[in-house]
Image 1 (cartoon, rainbow, N blue to C red):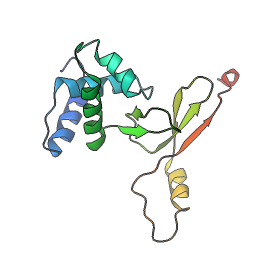
Image 2 (spheres, helix red, strand yellow; image 1 turned 90 degrees about the vertical axis):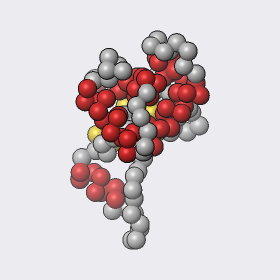
Image 3 (cartoon, one colour; image 1 turned 45 degrees about the vertical axis):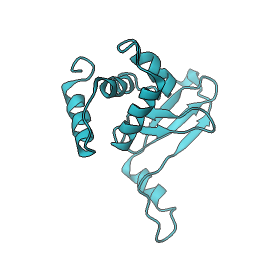
Image 4 (cartoon, helix red, strand yellow; image 1 turned 45 degrees about the horizontal axis):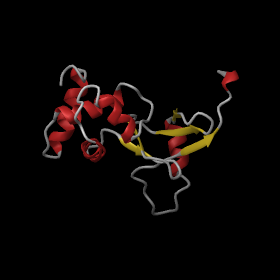
Length: 145
């Protein structure tokens, strides 16, 4: 497993799993590694294809079980756009997502503390958000990049 994840990420995975009474397995480490190594907001099917390069016999059900565990442990979060497949994001800092309708690519948009506080101000009195999801969709003008 150490070849799949850096020592730091392996410790992060092991500690998060231990809090839930679980242990790190090569399947969980492989799924976590496949999300961390390419921050492109993959679907479960994308992850299955990546992990099968290391674990050829892993099933889609096992990938889903690993993803559910990683989400439950707070290591990755689910990203939803319309009715498309759920995607997974390892960026746990406050941020928004932008989905390009032309390419389907999803970009992380950083949110500073002031932006997060501004968003929290729109909540009615007495409401307290534990989490939020902010997403945009549209097109990217690649001539500006």
